[in-house]
Image 1: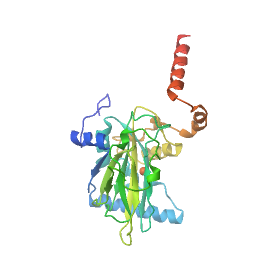
Image 2: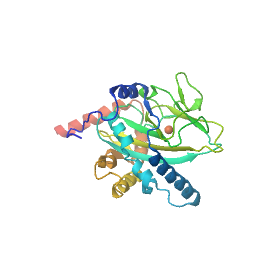
Image 3: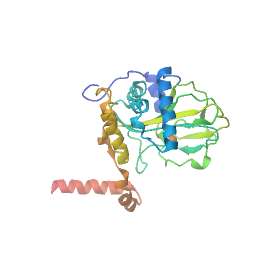
Image 4: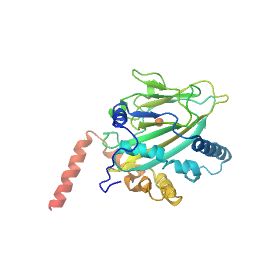
Amino acid sequence: MPEDGIKSNCCLSQTEVDQFNSEGYLIFDGFFDKNLNQLLKEDVDQLMTNRANKEETNLMVFPSLGSLTSEPIIVDRVADLMGTTFTHHHIHARWQGKGEPGVSWHHDYEQMPQTNRSHLMVHVFIYLDGLNGEIGDLLVLPGSHQRIMARDAYRQFMHEDLPGSVTIDNLSPGSFVIVHSALQHARRPKPGGETFRRYFIDTSYCQHGILWPAGRRLWHLNQMALDLGWDRNGKYKFLYDNSCFFDPHDYVEKFNTCNQGSLAVHLMEGINSHNEEIKA
Ligand SMILES: [Fe+2]
């Protein structure tokens, strides 16, 4: 990457970047090769067994799941959307079986409070065995990432279709969907799953340039990723740079006491008093 941190597209066409910016998501159907897909499934299976047995559940130490956080097939595409460097925020993994409940409409953009979309955060939804209309469909509301709203603004609609929403229920094994984290999405519960398991992993990345909310546990995991070599000989070291995070727990109580009226007034008061201090 050049010194200014700005890079040109390596994997995505400008049409894809434009589509992401307007719709808020991009689908990559069947992009993982069989070997990578199989190794990831084995890690998820082991993780689920460990959870049941109360054994190791830290995803970073699983060889395929940990290194997935810097998987070039994904992060080189995310880099094209970011246009600059970015930090890994989290990874979750599990498989979902028969009777899995749904998840109501929500978005996952980390901001406190929700006021703007100046910087990009993405989630990558990975479906190791694809989607086939069983257990749960992915619903997205294209363009909703451009509106500023609370994460649960559409929760009352549960997992019903919304005007303009899209149902994604047919993906090949080894597929992933990159979504703008502010995109409204849901999981609609579906019957089935007697034999099919809905393997699901999500990873997330935050664009550099601002501070993002992330609990200290996540900082610890990024340090662990460096220690384990998931930065691939330094090429992806930027992914585990915790300097773009703040721990929201340090701010919640104080913020709640001053979160009254228009925050722009508080912000300008702070800037003005800062400028007075500099003059004095
Ligand atoms: Fe979500």
